[in-house]
Image 1 (cartoon, rainbow, N blue to C red):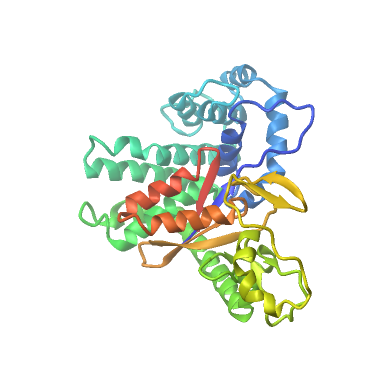
Image 2 (cartoon, rainbow, N blue to C red):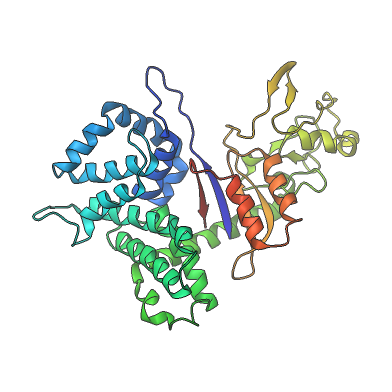
Length: 373
């Protein structure tokens, strides 16, 4: 299984106000209202979202939604859930979405388009899934599974209407593995409810096949050119998902021994080994550094941030397994490679799966998104 960290960027915009909780709003809207493939294009969508937020206040959106504008019912829910331009109110957000698709909540005569209905179901699937931890205490296992089923049912409805968002896939991928493992068999035969969610499972199967195919292609490319896909520093473990993911040595060393690195830190660590083969007489790399410490680059002292903006996707294998026993690969185009290695190394000293999952969550805030493939 591959986990991908997706960072919500701050666009380079001038003359526009950056509302409080804009990143939370952007992540939520991307997760719930667009096909999951669009997560890779988040940087292109965020400026559009910002312009739309600044064009109308939260109160204007609420007034329009109250008059029956169905698209603004979605928008009112997004702003209420994220706390962007409106006070954060999760229950109120769910009410705005529910009035579009839940018969008992719908106003008489309200006409809702297919696209808006799909987004409403996707938003409700996200809400149910995110709130599942709040019902884990004080409820029976059967009630807990019921809550899982509601999230999956909402996701199935969205998929049946043609929207396979990240909010749809997230409960689907997790529950699909649980059902295959027989985790719920002690409570009920899975065929009674969960297996009837045909649109959700079709979307999950398609995503799993695409992910497996892409992973196979990456592995084949890496096997044919390991020096271009794996960081050359001993013990690093960072790999690239494409050739451009790592930084190649700038010396005149032969292509057969030209190493690639995930960072200047690893280049420095590997310099003693590589120096004899590097015939270009390139300067010795600068001193290694740690995240949030000053680093020297081209003679200018800079602050090293945990977030980078070069767009290179790199990954690390975590000491975790999915329900099928496969290793978990954690990738990011924005987290510093040192952070990825820190996550892996700290997990190796954690005895329980719960501790390791909690550690992952500390690196994925509400303004980011953790996608499972």
